[in-house]
Image (cartoon, rainbow, N blue to C red; front, side, top):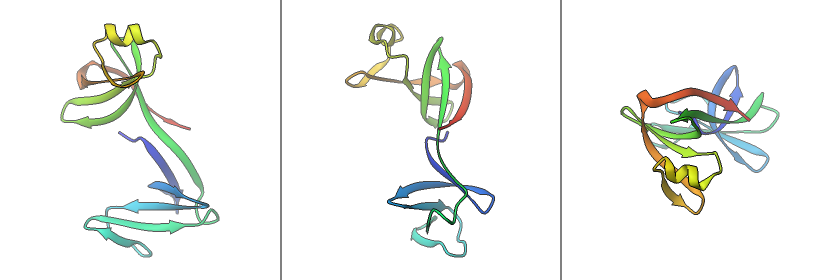
Length: 120
């Protein structure tokens, strides 16, 4: 599940982190112009002129008829965060109040519907 910035560079998408006017892109394989920052993690800094597109990607779904963001995945479970904005509904769904007004849960993958990525 993707949730974060993505840059299109040289026809490929890379996980990215904005860094002032520039952007840092990451890969798990050694490549020209990338520096190893830890084993299996390589970074390259690009200027705005070097990349084609910078977007934020997030994964959304519905679970038990309510809207959610997908925060992560583990085995056959999804970590989801309620986006419906109604605390009584969140409580009815049995969600954990992760922070004030932020409700999350682990949902079985087979119960997830309408899973898709949004590019913002």
